[in-house]
Structures are given as structure tokens and as C-alpha cells.
Amino acid sequence: MASKRLIPLLDRVLVQRAEALTKTKGGIVLPEKAQSKVLEGTIVAVGPGARNSQTGQHVPLAVTVGEKVLLPEYGGTKVDLGDTKEYHLFREADILAKIE
Image (cartoon, rainbow, N blue to C red):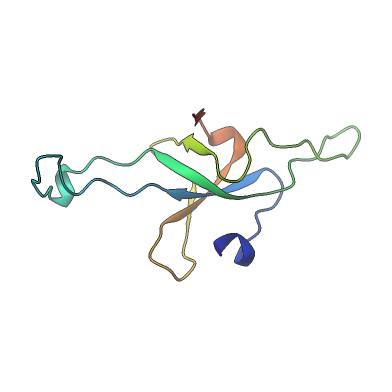
């Protein structure tokens, strides 16, 4: 649904961050300060790619919709799409790795 409302430009990628764990396996509820920042996300939408300066053609991205990726701790632009999920826009170069 989010990918229909927001289409990234050039080499930008829309990522839905994974939810932080609020409860341990043993059932203990963690306060917000004890929760670590989630560095994983799922790609929701991708742009067409950056343009090659010599030919003007789009360079395809190395990531596709639905892949899980490792994100940097800081960076990206938070985007509010009206639902409860947390979305961020990243450049493809800012994404650290794919998770299989």
C-alpha cells in the first residue's frame, strides 16, 4: 500500500524498519530506554536508479522490493505515510548489506 502512495526517485529506496523487541523470550517487558535501535528493514519501494553521467541511462539498483537489508544506525529520512509503520528513505549507497 505504501509503495503505491510514494515512489522514490533516482537511487533512493523506501524501507520499512523492523519492529523493536518489547518483550524478552522469558516474557519480561523491556522499557523504551533498554530497547536497542533496530538496524534491519524490508524494502517497500525502489526508484529507477541513478543516471550514468556519460550515457544518461539509468543504472539499475542492486536491491529489489521485498528484500531484507541492514541499515546504518543514523541516516535516512523518516517518512510519515499515515499508518502506524515506520518508513525511511535511504540512498542505495547508504544500505550496508542484504540479509538472506
